[in-house]
Length: 238
Length: 384
Image (cartoon, rainbow over all chains, first blue to last red; front, top):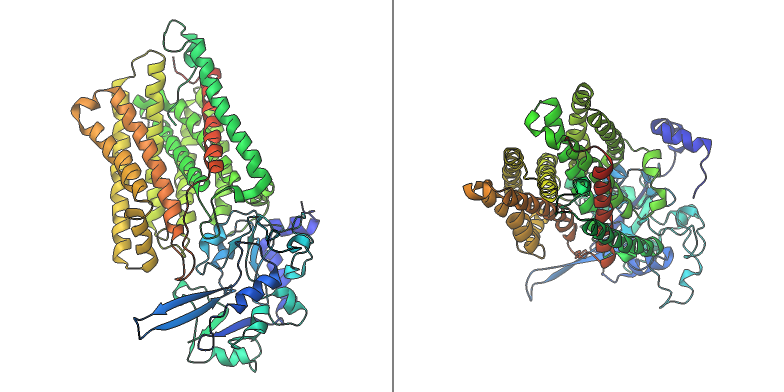
């Protein structure tokens, strides 16, 4: 059980004030954005694998998947691979519905989950139009992978110790956070770094000279389910 | 949840309830509750992996039961409000009973949603932390106010304070309609990712179906309690209650028809896939047999057949059929929409409750029946 400080009480009572207090210092932060070039994606699932390795996600929890769609009839067929991380929406439906504000939008554009506050109601999972959220049912790879439970990924920069420990995010919702703990160390997200076809780009949308800023203006650029009005932070290139 | 009670013990001349029967009634309920408690311990130790839920299928039995009992409660409460606020004196005999049903149903609903939390020990976060855009956050506060209001209403009903009852009923009607049950409908309706839920008619249907199930349960309880006590239920009262029930039921079915019709014309892939799951897919049996057959056709036949309408036994079964049918409605709200993947290529959900989910559900319902039985025995619920 977490300890409640006076500041926490204040935050609980006056959420708007908290935002106002936080706003001033964080406006100069980068706005992290990911661009995925579908023409370069070969559907190898390396992003999915490296994400699982990086975040040590348990069975049933997958931050990134590659959706495969086959079009046309033989011999005129085409396969479209669509990697799907969390869209880090600028208008996140998950944060809208979370009853305890465990999911919230950080100033750097990442939609975060406070594992210590989440009550595990899974309302956000039903509300996500991209199916990007998983529930941690507490399962383990220990039987297949020796030492799986020995340590957990330091998601959001928080050391969470052993999988069996009290700080494990079991019973909460989990999702991709653009490898926030890697960003803090100045590294790219694992999926971007390992992508075989170099289909993923990552950068700061606030910087007009960055690759992602330029690609975002491409006529090939589109968002998944644009009609949802979620303003995703992941941009696809057709 | 047809039930019986021991308030009749005082009328010891009646052959209906002997002490042996009363004791075995309690024993059966306690055993069911005990099984539920054992299942709860397993669930508490092993988390939600004891359920058949998954990330693709995040909500199941307990959420369905939760909205079922919220609806039952709101419906029973609105029935008492009709009595107190609109002076429907002829229904007064069921007033206190309906209030009691409303309280117990609401408590059960909260038990169900507690079971469903990944972190049960953090339930207080839901009160402490406030997200003004989250319907669930508002609902939890409405439920709390509503339970307090119901307890006050029961208190004044037992004291026969009609003025206060009228006032509480008047405050309670908007809370029950817009806050408690309309709000529970809004909880689903605002989820744009699930087009089947995402209609403005959805909360309206929630309120109407709440009235259907609440009236049906109160009717069933009124009849069975009188029968057990060896009294013949007042046929004019039964007919009056059944008429309300059937009126609500017909409106409910009509609104659902519009909703489905508009959904089909929208030609939205996910919506069509959801409707296909309900009508012809893995939940077809639930829709055609439970929701339509038991929940609509049987009660309508029993009500509109002039012979069966005169029989309190037939009306009892009509009410029980509705109570079961609405449970089918609740399952069909929660489950089929979630089985359809939100993006092509994501895994489709499939769901059937695990035995832990069943036994805990039965345990919670048994607890409700025990509370009800004790309450009618200890409190002066009956007018005479």
